[in-house]
Structure formats: structure tokens, C-alpha cells
Image 1 (tube, one colour):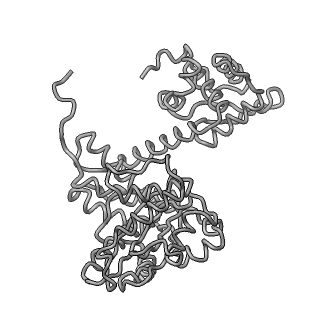
Image 2: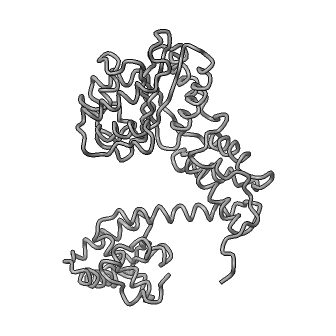
Length: 416
């Protein structure tokens, strides 16, 4: 084994982090309409007035979170020039926080020191709400000064993951001022959602106050995506590191993914990674194509892992037949192997028709190739199936099934 397993070589990157979600650009491109509307809705905070509650919605990767971070950074910096106003933003991601209790705990812990975090058990909801009001009030600057206005803008990203009823935290926050829950600060809620129907799901009382101002973020078109990519690329890559077709190809892919800038940036980063891994300083279109293939493979793996168990058993059966060079195979042959796989795991098998349905679903997912055969009057019509990806990739996707059922002998030569 060599003395050094990791060593720096050639790289196309100048600042790879500029292509990540955490990076906030110095200027936003492609969101002029949304920026103008958003800035207008934030204007009361500049004057120390009651902030608007603002609701942002649109598909994933269209700039909702990036625009919010960009504007709030500027707002906090600019308002600091005025002695009578203090503005603070708090950002909480609600993904996985399905209850108001958990959202409140997350808000408290965002505002507390690491050594003083609140556990997710041991307190009632009312106690956690009390901790939350206190933590928000503690953000006030000069709380006893009646001339000082303290504004807190609470950003709830992926807010559609949490409950929406009349007793929810959304209702509590939207009525905090009129219910005298806060003594020293005034809170504005900024809700961010990928679910275009989320406002309609809210309790009418919550909707009337929480969604005072709404902004819809449309998808990026190809030209806007290229502008986003070029802006980030100027920072992320060295001069002349990208061949001419790289950014248009990444933008076209992002456009096909419903105008998702995040997908396009991920692809550009993956292309740069491949060039660096091959000790090159230039990124070419082949690197982009490699990145697309890798991303699509990962999507297939994730899709397989969410399937029901018998779909996985059917795929495992087809996989073993492929390992024995016995594919393409008809449903009847696959069903025979599927029955064996079920027996290996101690499960009852389903009918051949159900296995065919599973295989057709796997074909739609892109994990299986399905071809129709027509043998005329004598042979009739039937389907044949084969795996659509390298065997090692599918072994990885079926790792849980292989572990629980045992490794079929056909895979003995395919250890990674």
C-alpha cells in the first residue's frame, strides 16, 4: 500500500463551496420580480414597524431559500445603521418536525447555547411554548428602552411538513402580538413551502393572518439557469476551467428537472469532481454526461429502496438470473426464481401475474428493461425482462433484502 492514500493534484476548482446550498451569492440572478416583491414586503421592518407575515411557495430548487437568506442578510446589515431599530432573523427547517411541539423545541434550541439545549421529552407543550416566547424576547436589544423597536423574522423552511390546525404553532405565532405572548419583540413569520396547495390546507384563522403576503416563485427557464450557473462558476472554478458546452448542458438538465437550479448546480459540481478525480484542470461535456448518469443511478437506487418488499424480491430474482447469464427472461422464469427468493427469506410468494406487475413498475422506475416479443401465431406475444443497470449497483440497492434473505449463490463472483 502506498504511503499516501490522499494527495492533492490538479483541480478545476477555485472555490468548490460556491456550488453548494450553503453558499449565498453576493447578487441574485434570475429572480428580479420575486426580489422586488419580497423587498417591498420586508420594508416595514426597516422602519421598526410590525413586520408582515410572508409566505413563499414554489417547486424545489427555484430560489426561495436562497432569496430569503440573501435579503435577510442585507436587511440585518442595513437596519443596523439605525439606532432605534434592531432586526434579527431565525431560520428553522421543519423537515421531520411533524408536530408543533417539535417545531417549538427546534426554535428554542436554535436560540440557546449548545450546552443548554431543550430535550424533546419531559416538558408539556405549554412549557415549551413558554420557553420559546422567552427565547424570542431575549433577542431584544435594550428591551427597557421604549424608543427601541426589536423585530424578529422567524423563517420556517419546509413549513408544510408540520401541522396546520387552529391550535398549531403557526396559529400561536401568527397571534403572538395580539395575545401578549411577547413583551419586547415583534415577530414576523416567513413560511417557505414546496407544496403549492399548502395555503389551502391551513385553518382559515391561520391562513388569514399567517399568509398576509404571498410570493410565488416560478421555475427557472434555460436562460435564467445559465445565468445562475455562470455566476456561481465565476467563483467556483479557475479561469478557463469549463469547456463551452458545460454550462448550457447543465442548464438544460436543470430545465428538464422542472427548472431546478439546485439540480443544475449539483450536476456542475459533480462534473468538476470527476475532472479533479482524474487529475485534470478542465471540465468537459463528457464529465457532465458522467455526472448525469451518476445522479440518475442514485435516483434509481433511492427509488428501489422505497419499493414494497415483493417488488424487491422480484428484482432480486431477476438479478440472480442476470448473474447466471439467463436474461432476458420471461415472467414465468422470473417467477420461479422469485419463489425461491421468497422461500430463502421464509415468506409466502405471490402469483405470477403480480410479479409481472412488479416488473412493469420496475421498468417505469428505470431499474428494469422490458421488451415485447412477438412470435406470431405459433409463439404469441410476451414480455422479456432484464436489469437496466450494472449488477453491483443493484446489489447495493437491494442490500437489505440480500442481508435478510441470504446471498444467492449466483452472486458469489460479484463481491465488491
